[in-house]
Image (cartoon, rainbow, N blue to C red; front, top):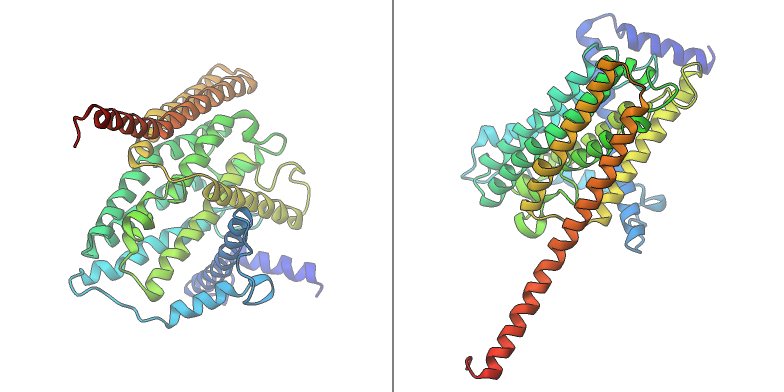
Length: 396
């Protein structure tokens, strides 16, 4: 049997569920394959982020363990597995031990419906695949809150409350941004959404929705500049500050898995997935390569944003969601609905969407410059007033 034929047989087994002929065995094999694949991928993502951030900061990053430091993540994983699993005496035992699983499992469940080619996916043909991803990914909020409440630590509690407030606030614009794509495609099946982009990706028609998605996804991932729930300088690590060993590694594994899932999800919704620019006539190797390249591109963008921008204040974080992203999200959905109802050409979405994106970016830039400059000006005014008071003899 040739290599290509063997791969096709494997795909047939995967799609038809013919592992060992038993449903439980089939589910177990799929679970082991997915967990193993995601674990190796997360190790590579950690290495990639370390090297990329080091490059931006003019450092070398991991260099000693393996070629180019590739085995550094393996060494870290072995170290975490060998560490003692500690639990605070005053912690709520069952909630404390269950929280990592509640945060960990949804990250892998969303992987189920993502299409990598037109024929390959675990359950990629789910008619409500978009709804499934949005619904399941929201469950991870409960895991962060459980970790914060059960640890009996004020830092973990504050981190858990911040996580809930932030994820709920940015969940709405994230859902609305992909909802506008679903309205334009007329379906929630992810494969059908990809097929609708075989000529032009939705990034061209809806640049504002893509910007909202990337911003809200960064906040959902709690990555800089939206990493307030796990800010080391303020909360010493956030909800998982009291975790160690394998339970802490489950949080890290879930976080990087969410990074991979949201990047793949963004490539499917806005970049054409495996369909654009070659169409659906190319074979599965090209489709897998396209999905891989687009997903990696979005992952690098997330990492680049985290290495470039400083952390926001909590008031800036919440104000940006409720005063900027959510109104823009409703505007995008309204424009898409009008175009679909009245049958206008798709270009009528692009022009106001791009205009709203430019105007909002200018307003946010001006606002951020003001908030950064204002404390410095207030400090200088205070020092001048104090110096004048000293000169007048009113301050001894």
